[in-house]
Length: 332
Image (cartoon, rainbow, N blue to C red; front, side, top):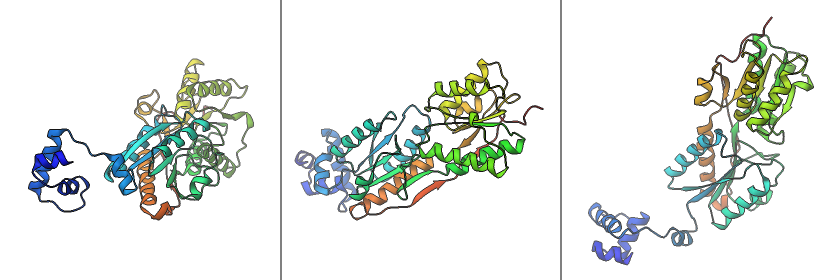
């Protein structure tokens, strides 16, 4: 900073004021300081600054599967909102492993992040210690068991219900569902929405029509084959994850079946490939970008409160059923 001040012909305190925006500096002087910083390739020491102000202006994000197309769009919302507040983001992938998630948390704590956003890899993991010590933390997409505050997600019960009701209105009664791990709030709530819709129309739910996968394409493929090879296969299938939807569509093709003439399909999440698939896929569209924006805004509010004591409620965003060509009335 002394070198920058000497080159710019100003005091060190003026350089500090320009960098930290603590006091008003004339535009002419501020420009001279910035030109000197560029000439010397000077970058403020953020570590030293964080020790002085007690904040790093960095947050951590832990997601369970970076290869799932759902999360990059959420991350975009997180980063855009963080950037508006001059915050940086460290991204971590837990690979659906609670042990890895804990290691990522430890790494983020060691780097003194101001707060953490987490999509849980395991709903049974205890986060009580973090909440008790008032460390700023917000859950997004997947919520831990009993979460009553500090979370942003889709209204998954309503989403599962609306997808099922669409099929029921088309005349389907033999409806199957492929879910992910039911310990995860997202898939548990979507299945509950499915159950409520079926029960509301007094339609029996057959045990063999309920399959649980590991959220990967192969499990969607294997579940699809198992369902469609039943003596009385379902006329419609809902998948609660986009990767398993791809596997299901491959199973339909490998068995030589035609969608939706022989089996209707509904998936979750809307991407470029869902609209360019053959047939164009009916999906439940989540507000992925908005989830990221709202979660980050909630975390910033916690960080700004005394000791992270600000705790918001659970925000549930409504999903939209996008009806395309993969759903139709069942064959006679």
